[in-house]
Image (tube, rainbow, N blue to C red; front, side, top):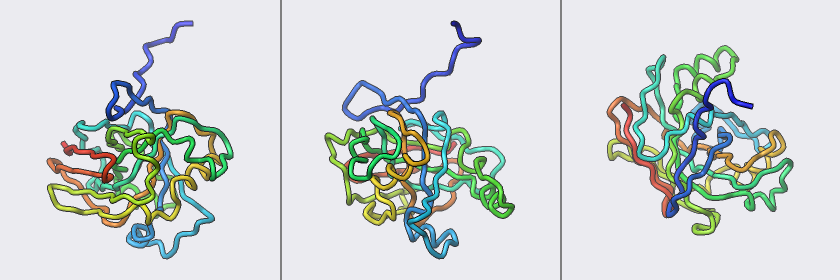
Length: 229
């Protein structure tokens, strides 16, 4: 049966060392996964019993090398540096001991946030989708396959804006490591091949302005460079 109009292209990311692309199904993200960031955002403590998840549209992805448009209706566009996990397998209620078997590979990305809109929504107890799920809100590097890198437990995660380092941590400091995130998410959603997971940001989030250049790196695995326009 024909579609009423042509469906949009499938969002995708390049795969390092390959001419194949990774098709994106959903984009999940976890909040408050580094204690230092939770503290800078005003949270006194983070409970492992209650992980905070949200989503972005798949077509919010900006592949590596793309310029990122400054979004409308905000004066506080903030960067949040994150390791990104790409899944090649999924399922429901995935056991944490097998969760890493689902991983295709890893990259680095920015969870861009309209901070002023997020604060306004939080103050009213309202959902803050408009602060997280806008067009171009998820720049992501090329993905590197786990069969090349293994599953990193330690790796430097850093972001420089205009050559000045703003965020710098080791992924070992995550409250929920990758396997735990996958297992927790699979109790809420049926995970699918093509899912991306943003794994949380460390301290140092801050504003971006038009013309800013950024360089995000997951050391030894992925680099993302771009510019706000």
